[in-house]
Image 1 (cartoon, rainbow, N blue to C red):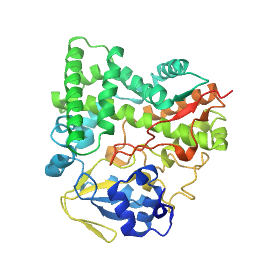
Image 2 (cartoon, rainbow, N blue to C red):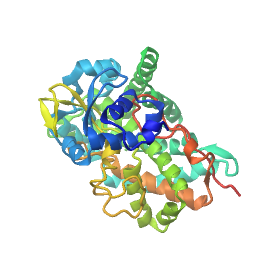
Image 3 (cartoon, rainbow, N blue to C red):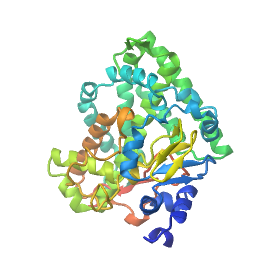
Length: 419
């Protein structure tokens, strides 16, 4: 960590420069920068690597308000020039979904998906999640160092979301590889080519899979979405492909990195792990604190201002892009006492943290993420109570791709049973 990051006297200019540059030091530990921004520049203009100026919101109260503010649009077609500069052309066909839309379209899409992706359907997966968890751990070497990310953290939510959607088992590895490219690709000509290729492959695959579901329905979520309708009709072909994409991608990447974050921080804090493992209720509470403490979704997806908006003393001009730092909001000392300490007994955290967003765009997959986290952590630590990190905590490597989609570890070396 650089001296500037270690200092509590970081100026707003230094903090903004650090956040804009997305340096390796910032990616490894963004929290001191966010603390400085909350204090000195809570609505901060940035010039990040993608070359499109944005405004970053870092305080909790402002974040809550912005997440539910209809003046901040999620329909990126309204900021199409900025969208092209950031994502290129290939992403547009995959972004025709509820995540990137406003009412009334968002209302219709959310309602259709909500009638199929229900808490009851999620709860029906409990035994399957446990079976997948046990099977993955059965295959992990216990006495040798193992990188838990590719061996456990990623395949667990991938298999679960594929099970939910109805993706055949022999096709899941390829879907994971394409999704990994999208999640970890940065900016620049070569990165853009890799992104376009992966997104094109995923789009073609989902078109083919949906065609097969129309021909042979199987009762899984994707089949249900093919036939689901509300008073305004069914999903269009484009909306169906895009919805399948966002459920597949967001439905496993964010949880995979979140499981990794949770394992890392609990191994670094044995007393917190002990408290979490007392009973299922304690683990459920611990999972919520982990969502607050190190959420895998660092920033909200882009919004743009449909009109001039003043937040605190900063005018966000019409058309400007806005990001909301969920990571920073979740460590705001005005809301969370001693926010940089992980406290699995912290009261009322589930109702307060913003890891799943807020308002109309609150994450529809939150119940599934909670279920997977609770089963994964409970099973892992019950089976391997002496599990240890394979490196010193300060040597852990975090994702350093500029402006990555997720906040998570690049690798998680552990020894499951050091004895």
